[in-house]
Image 1: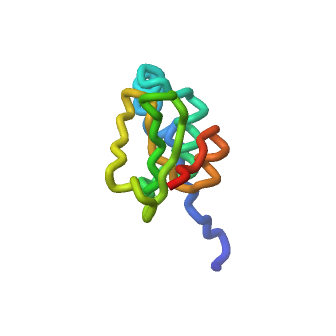
Image 2 (image 1 turned 135 degrees about the vertical axis):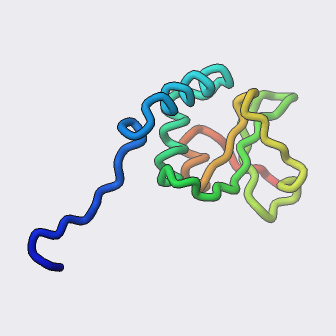
Length: 105
C-alpha cells in the first residue's frame, strides 16, 4: 500500500439516509417489530441486501414464533407477512437470538 493511501470506509445508513432509518422504524413498529429486531436484521445482512432465506413465521393458532429453513417440509408453502410481525432471517443463530424456534418439520 502506498504512503498516504486510505481505505474508504463504508458510511453508516444513519448518516447516508436518516429518513430511511426513521421510516423503517415507524413501519416496523406498526408491524410489531422492535427497533432491536430491525437493527439486528440490518446488521446481520451487512445492510447490503444480502439474500436472507430463513422464514420467520408466526403461528395463527398459537402465536408461536417459528422459523423455517430451505429444504424443510413446509418451507415452500410458508408465506411471510411483515404486517403481522413475520420476518426474514439471514442465519439460524439470528432467528434463535431473536427468540424464534426452528420448525420441527
